[in-house]
Image (cartoon, rainbow, N blue to C red):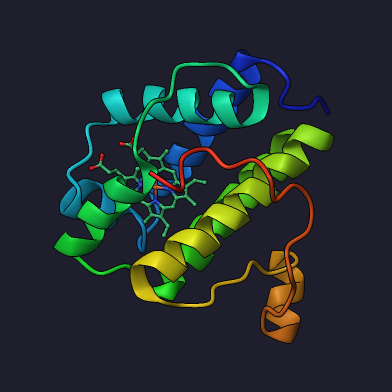
Length: 155
Ligand code: HEM
């Protein structure tokens, strides 16, 4: 398996991930009904976002917290949405990629989920170690890896 070291790899990850989201009974309504997301705009934006996080490419200039706050005001986020979002993301990464950037993609997503959960719903969200361990023990692991990459939480 390769690492997420080119825009083409990031593209494939993001497209695959949103394909999962679009068919997920918990998350799909948030995107399609609450936020009424235009996928043709959202997916390229998210490719830019992850290229900035992982590869340092310029391009994403959004306001991530503000974007989620607008969605939250339409319909409140819940901890299980973060659980599912992270679970699908980690599975998507692990299905196709391995290496330092793949680990960073998961660590960054965990950190951003925790930040969004804290800021939007005042909830101390933490990622599970892996879906199997979470199912067995009730999700108690702390995240590791790169906590420094911060694409836009402060805006
Ligand atoms: C419960 C988990 C999450 C849900 C339900 C969710 C949902 C959404 C929705 C509905 C939008 C579209 C907003 C709009 O255009 O109107 C959005 C945008 C976005 N999300 Fe999430 N999200 C979640 C977690 C995350 C996480 C953990 C990250 C990053 C690691 C992330 C990154 C982004 C980015 C970069 C945008 C684009 C913001 C912009 O417009 O600049 N999301 N999200």
